Image 1 (tube, rainbow, N blue to C red):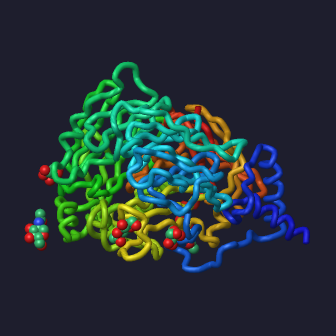
Image 2 (image 1 turned 120 degrees about the vertical axis):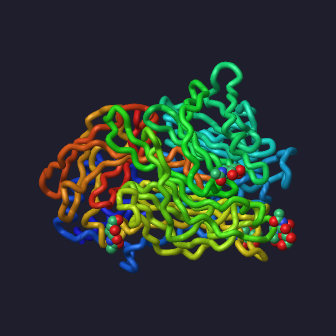
Length: 576
Ligand SMILES: *[C@@H]1O[C@H](CO)[C@@H](O)[C@H](O)[C@H]1NC(C)=O
Ligand SMILES: *[C@@H]1O[C@H](CO)[C@@H](O)[C@H](O)[C@H]1NC(C)=O
Ligand SMILES: *[C@@H]1O[C@H](CO)[C@@H](O)[C@H](O)[C@H]1NC(C)=O
Ligand SMILES: *[C@@H]1O[C@H](CO)[C@@H](O)[C@H](O)[C@H]1NC(C)=O
Ligand SMILES: *[C@@H]1O[C@H](CO)[C@@H](O)[C@H](O)[C@H]1NC(C)=O
């Protein structure tokens, strides 16, 4: 009986094993939790909630049949809720606005009096949905989280294309919602990319017909700067340079990839610092020939110059969009290009994926591996032009030898094509939603019906067989504040045998994901000293936080302890 009640309490406090309690750990509960943890491992073996099935290769969970909208854009906030939004002109959604609210918008193209929601908040711990209210059209827009934890969303379509919208995560009240800033943008932003800047502002780059960029908060003056690179990479037939891949690197410049070209860009002086070679093949990788890209994990963060490597995967061969609209669905690209952009003479190294993919999402896992998930094997992004859903994710291990980096994972059953998305959750799962290649909500009579469901993919590291090796963080306490170049003691527990040399500490900035690109996603591997065994399954490791805002812009990160490739649950830390 005692064992049982302790276990129940333990489970309730451990969201990886149970979704029932939204408990936020304070330093107090942290200590209590520590004591209970000791007790439970003394009295009992850790218990398994999930049946042990086909383990290696990951596992899928069906979370929600319908969240009422298409998960076209997603962002995890530091209260462990995911803000999701769609577009306002798909017609009526499948979820009503809260408190009987309705929206009257004379500019709206489909429904001018609309009592349905087009944005929701997904409470990950409780697996619950709350409808949110958006005033203007947010279709194909972009965003980033500010250092204070608020989500800034920019642009959209129609009456929303110059709007900025702010979402402050709920703290005390439960009814926080979007707040709109009318005509906050200098230019219309539709299919633009945002990136957070070292001190916490944002740059908003491109968008359809916009060969320029701007800042939020506004710079003095016009706040609009030309970027001819976007005009040069704009394919007159099918663009192929929308939602450019943008990454901030250690020297303070932005790497920008659009279509089949890439540059290093000094945004403060509006100057192209470097032009990279064209990726072999010269095929387009951006919308609508949508591939994806990540900045691979940043390491040796105290070095005077930190190496940066970019990985771009998938997309569609030249001409695919035109062909697809003419009824021919060309096979997607099966190549990835990897380039060390900080090398004096950088060159692309090509790799072949086990599965060709267009509209795949690339998500950095806490252990530094890359999950390639969602998408199709033929056609492109756009209405009705994607084919052959690729149901199996693929894992990419950047540190393995060339030729042995990819591993195909277990498939799901739901096609996730155009307008699907994926984000990493704090517990190491990857949340997957969306898919709607139609101009409306079409649930019947189409090949790929509008998908309102949510799923999670749990990589093999979450398999119960791995639970004795999984670290559990005790310090720092959740929501701890950290600074640059700080020595940080990370205290954690592992029940099983610890390989001291296989412990690392990582920090992940959660992404704003839309259209197969996870904006602002970055992973930092912190420098560490020896791991010390404190006794009773407890360990401590001293790490040093990143050196500068170029490596890690201000704001919220998830901190993980990784042991033998198996990450702990992440805890939120605030870099200030
Ligand atoms: C959404 O609502 C429509 C109309 O009420 C219904 O036909 C459809 O099945 C619903 N879809 C889902 C996924 O719940
Ligand atoms: C890069 O893309 C442009 C525009 O689509 C195309 O004209 C050019 O041929 C491509 N470059 C290479 C090397 O294939
Ligand atoms: C479109 O398809 C038709 C019929 O197959 C073909 O004759 C035509 O050349 C195609 N057009 C393009 C631009 O590929
Ligand atoms: C999708 O739904 C819209 C609105 O209900 C309808 O007009 C359209 O014909 C449907 N499309 C298909 C391909 O069924
Ligand atoms: C345990 O995690 C490792 C590392 O991610 C993985 O390779 C392995 O397949 C997992 N074991 C099981 C049984 O899933």
